[in-house]
Length: 394
Image (cartoon, one colour):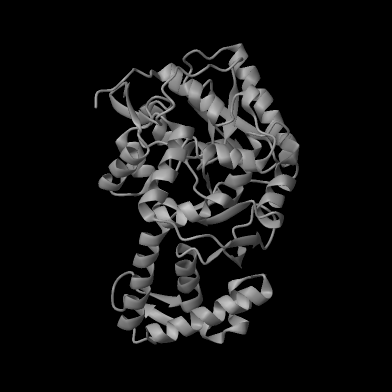
């Protein structure tokens, strides 16, 4: 099918500004509205979730209280494994779709690998592991939420260890609890619960996953892709394959199932949902944003030249391809930021094109907003980048 119309860089940036709740007029009232707009928030680094929400709330002072409520009281948001076996925060209503579309295949591989490694180490068999699993889930149901150590007090077999890759350079000792809980997470049986410390803590409790229906995999893939295209379209086939972690045949089948429309982009063909072909509005006013490392907007596409100049990547990404904290101006990345030990938010512009007094004033305003709601909290990104390290060095 021939592309129906051209969507240029300016329109793509306008879509991003409004649909990702970054322009002033588009800011959200609740964390649920932010997650719904973005489909998923990266959850590998716990602080990313709160920082990504705070950058998009009309009243960022409510970020910690309201995000904690959504995650741990109302359970309207849930932190679980999703695309590419990465931990995300999703709207709870989307958990069944995520599980069927991306989780099942990953879970099967994870369980098979665990059993293979246990067998190679002479550890107990699948029947033994099933007993431990059922006992662990029963203990978690009784407790409501629990750490791995607490669960091991109820089910001592979780403490058993086995040697992985014996004789290899990467030989290691694995504890049953660590590997089993990872498998149960991929299978959609358990999710991350409350952290042990503050909202920035990477130590957490486990909880039973919200009950959800079992969906047809192909239909679930179509729904997830449709939701993501509505938030992030237009996107190329490569973007879609990268974001979902699916095979290209699965991406194409999902595009066909939702009736996606091809559009012409700079450098190739992209896709939008069937009802998203009209020109997008532009933001009412210029906007700036300080987004955290692993923010879903910065990490949303594999092909990023339309919002991030290639020459900026060495400073803003780590060696594994994780983006650090970024400074945005009107839909493009122009620099990075960091928080120093004394709480000061510092930033640097790396791309001076079109940057003047208005830009710097808007960035300063965004930095003050961030400083105000962070208060005494100190943030160190889990994946540190060259610019972030440089900005925090004294």
